[in-house]
Image (cartoon, rainbow, N blue to C red; front, side, top):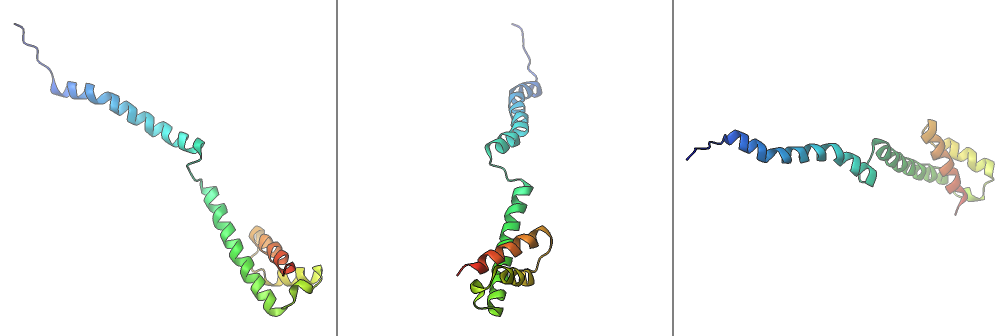
Length: 110
């Protein structure tokens, strides 16, 4: 009878190698599949959502301040509403432009 000796480290390695390969493939392909499926938020998406919330709040503040100054703002002419909105839109740049336009648009309504 011949005695076959097995190396316990080699047998463990042989048993665990497929699991390591599956893990590596999953780590590499997981983010790609999640991104393609739309399950991943990018920094730009989060920034856009944050900007939208900030703009919404600033428009609300602008409309409130403008209506305190001119309670019948919807009765004003376009140029007067425009001037009133520019006065109370506090931001500058691209966000400020959106705040100003949104404020003027809401001042036109009831």
